[in-house]
Length: 153
Image 1 (cartoon, rainbow, N blue to C red):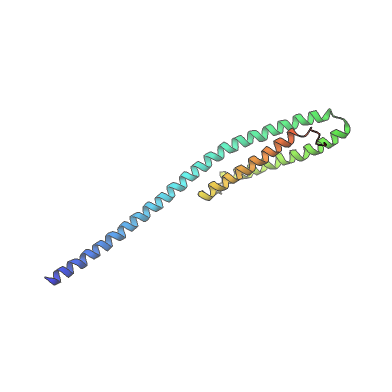
Image 2: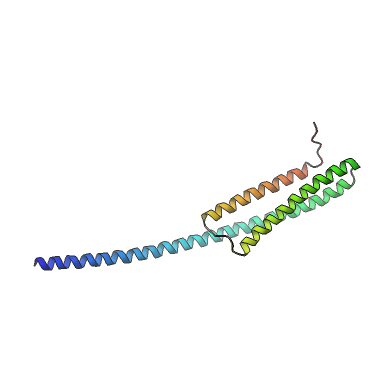
């Protein structure tokens, strides 16, 4: 009788161990699938946010280009001393706008070519890029508005 009890306990332990291994395998599959789903969710969110940001940024850059053209016309009517100073300042601002346009195009290219690894870090990096880009475009806009202000007090 003792032998039967010991033998049956050993079989139960083997079955329990086998069940635990299967449970662990299943759990790993679930975790792997969960990570894959999260990655896809992040990718979808980041790409959708990027499209909105890109569209808004392209519109801002285009408006800045129009504003620069209008300022060039206004500068052409200024006196010679002012014309030279304003043209130099506007050229610098126009160059900044071109650099922003190129920066946006490069980032867009990375999205098109799937060169971005989509994870939580990617989400944070995109938010950082968007914050910096928005800051730069806001500074450019302010500088354009202040172009004709006489900063000498």
